Structure formats: C-alpha cells, structure tokens
Amino acid sequence: MKLTKLAIAATLFTGCAFNSYADIDTNNINQVIENSMARFDVPGMAVAIVENDNVVFAKGFGVSHLETGNKVNKDTLFGIASNTKAFTAAALAKLVDEEKLSWDDKVIDHLPEFRLYDAYVTREMTIRDLLSHRSGLGLGQGDLMIWPDTNKSIEEIFAGLKYLKPASSFRSKYAYNNLMFVTAGEVVARVSGMSWNDYIEKNILQPLKMGNSRAGFSRIPSNNKNWATGHIPMDGKLHPFFVNYLEDFRGAGAIASSVSDMSQWLRTQLAGGTMPNGEQLFSDKQQTQMWHPHITSVASKSAYEAYHQQFRGYGLGWSIEDYHGVKKLAHGGGILGMVSQVTLVPEKNLGIVILSNQQAFGALSAITHEVLEDALGLEDKDWVEELAKKHFEGKQKAYANAKPEAPADYQPQLPNISYTGTLKDDWYGDVIIEELDGKLRIDFTHTKRLKGQLEHYTGNTFIVKWDEKLLEADAFITFDMTTKNRVESAKMKAVSTAVTDFSFDFRNLTLKAKK
Image 1: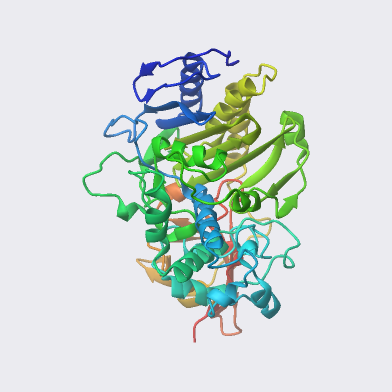
Image 2: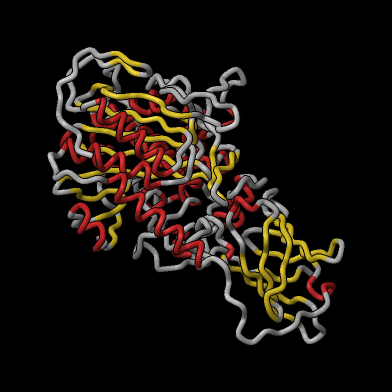
C-alpha cells in the first residue's frame, strides 16, 4: 500500500497529537497497521513515528490481552526485549563520556571474575567486543542460563561462562549472543556503583522523560495495569502467554516501554545524543562509535532483491545496513508471544518503533517497509501481503517438518530405571531424570518452565515433550550408556530448529551423570 505524502498540521485523534508538518498520511498509516494486524492475527500493537524531531504518529491498536479486552494505547507497556541492547550501549557511552571507562578497556579490568573458555579471549575481550557479537560464542549460546525465566544469579551466570566452548575464533565471525550483553550490563553496574536497572532508570529513562518505562517488569508500579500480555498461535487459536518481559536478560533485554516513551528515545538518537529538552544524553562522538559496524556479515541475496542491500553489520547495540542507498539502523526484540522493532534512517531524520503482543515479526516488518517506501519515494509494493505470504508459507513448511520421521531401524529401550538419575552440565547445572507413574520425566532444576515427559523414539533416544506446549521446544535427548546399562552422559538438540527459538540452546549442553 503506497503512503501518499501529505502535509498534516495540528491534527488530533485518539492516542496522538500532531503539532507540526509531516510527510505521513495518517489515514493510510492506520489502514496499513490494521491490515497487517488482521493478516498476521496480531491482537494488539502500538506504533510511533518520529520525523524531523517531531512525533508525527503515536497510537495504539487492538487489545493488550484477548481475555480482558483492554485497549492498547500509546502508553501501553510492552517488553522491548533485545531493543534493550541499545540502551545498555548508551549507558556505557555515557560512562565513556565521563571518562570512567573506554570502549577498548579490557572486561577483566572492571570484572576481575570474568572468565571465558579460552584464556587469550578472557584477557583480550574489550567492552567494544561485548557489544558487537564477535566474542566467538555461537548464536544464543548459553541462553538456557537466562531463558526462559531461570533462578540463576549474576554470579552463577558468570561462573558458567568459562565452560562455553567457542563456536568460532575470537573477532572472526558475527554470532548473536545475549550473555555478552548481560556481562556489559554488569560492567555498567560495577563502574557506576549502582545496579544496571537503577542506572538505566535514573540516567537514561528519567532524563528522557520516559516516565512509564522500567528496567524490569517487576519494577512497574502495581497501580499501572496498562501493560500487554504476549500471545502464541497454536492449533488455529491465539493463547495468552505471560512472561516477565525477559527480566533475567538484564542488559540484554529487560526493559518495558511504550511507543510514547520510545519516541523520545528515537528523537534523541536522531539528534546525535541531544535529548528533547536540549541536554546531552551522550556525545555525538560516542554515537559515531555505536553506529559504526564493528563486525560485518555477508549481505543476503533475498535482501538485495527486496531492498538493494549491499552490506550489513553490527555496531554497538545496533544492526546496520544500507536500504536502497541510505543507511538504516535497526533492531528487533523477541519474547515468547511478543515482538518489537525499532528503525532509524538518519539521512531522512526518521524513526519508527513498533511494539506488539504476538510473535509475528513479519507484521512489524511490513509496516516498517510501507513507511520507508513513502519516506524514500520508492515504488509501490504491498508489503503486508508479500510478507504475510512468506510468513505463513514458512510456518506451514516448518510445522510440516517439525514432526520427526519414524526411525529407519527402530531399537527398543532399556527399562526406565536405567535412565534415571541426575545429570549435570558444567554451565547450566543439574537436570534430573526420574520415573513417575511409569513415565520418564525430565526436570531442568533452574528453569520452572522446563519440566516434561520423555517419549521413546528409538534405542536410547527419546523426545522431550515439555508440559508447557506453547514453548514449541520439543527436543531429542540421546543417552550414552555404560556397560552396566546406566547413563554415562547425554546430548540434546531441538526436534525442529525452524520452530524452536534459538535461545533454547539444548545443542550446547554436555550432560554427564552426576557422581
């Protein structure tokens, strides 16, 4: 749907006041959002657009929870998940401006207990490395220490880091990793003398007048009920699914915010660190560092065909690419049942934030592309329909392949008692296998949602069926047995990597029988 440029002056409607001229046709924007929500089955969404230092659009759509029917507005809080990462980078930028640290400081100079698997990497890892996904750890490696909702302390997380074997050599490859941002958040705490949560709220959210936002779900005032619950589609129906907005992710993903508040963040980013009140949050010099690609990856053929992507990379808390010849900074955020997207086009002084309570990224991307289409004067394209087609075709294919095929050479299992006992992974901790009512059960002892039943597949391989089906994280577990038919060790992997979130990193576990 083409967005026609139209000058809008001092228009007022539910959720947003317009106080300046803008290049956005609000009727078309509304229609695009409603079409996208309907096509992707999204219950609630909020969108804000900033242009030329003005909030030209800020509005909520739909409901925050299907069962309550409460309406979403511009002040409704959502978990912004990994869009938190740019806030953690900004916190460190402030500390750099104050000469309390340098981007190239060694992490161990601020966190003496910090240890990774390789001694060289431990010694050489810098603040800059933490924020650019070039540590050598793999995609989501170690996330089971924080996902979903574990009871591990920051000390226990740090104790586990040294057991994560690198997936690539240091600084050689981009691989998205949350634990390095958890570490970065702790650097903020050590250098500032206050918790990451307190620092973010007192030094970023409050100066920006982001009055409803909090650095953690538990910090939302009890009298504020205007927050969204996630929804997960399964069996043709949406299921409300509450999680605490990734509070365990700390500096990697814990912030709760609204589009009204986030619009102030976008204005500040586009103004080189100058806040709407005219004061400096961080310097333009530090923004240059955050917006510079510190690691690059190969541009995809599909992205080139869609929007002429020539390069892509990652700065400090921001993904960076070219989009039809202009620089675009962006980031997505994902929680079970809730996704968000932030986009900046500095050349056009344009920012877009979209928060939603369903896990369909395509719905957000379609709206973003439609806005950029108009802002850049691009050829008309129906992004909602194009991305919806890809989304549902991809889901259909993924779910069709999610069921494991029957084993070619089926082998019987040993008696259930042979598999029972406590297994331990060095970085995660204890996993218990026990027999209850004739069934084998599995219990990830640090993670209340990871309890389930083992269904025999073949030989010493079982499929873990979690009690909470909405996790969509069925996994194979294969036991290695001793000559006395007792478990010596076990390995796990997702049944379907196309369906299961990468943060369920069962693939990185090395479970050994606890002596």
